[in-house]
Length: 191
View: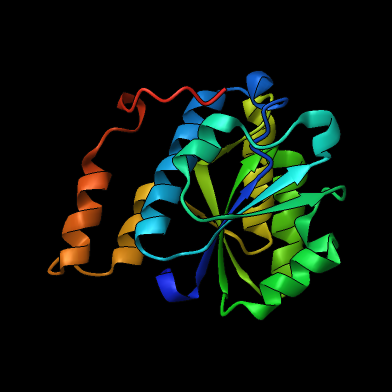
């Protein structure tokens, strides 16, 4: 099953200022997420962010927010975003069936959100290089568990090119320039 941009949503889980400094590979994770969010914006794919207990962990990292275009932020106290009724209802109101998920920590909030999405009937795409935990082994186990339940592991490039679908359009040319730009050369400080 391929991703289709008119059926997709990019869900970025808990890229919070108080958490990112302790995430193994945190800078790379947030760069990949920001890169795909920029592609999503160009293709009119909705971008949603969650913030877990922001009064303690802070909001989404300012450097990430500055990289994003239009997006929606959901604050939560449940580990799974799907346990927040207003989030689940708003998602149901979208014409979305495919959720590309990424964030921190993979084995807690990302995994529980992915499992909740799967249970609700969504197709879940686990953005591997943009999902992490304090220890990379925890992230690996989380991805394996999510995929065993039906999620599909993907990379940012896979998602972008599936959303693009074809190479002979002006939109492809515009977005492809973004795809060729290396993630780490943008000089953005995320946290």
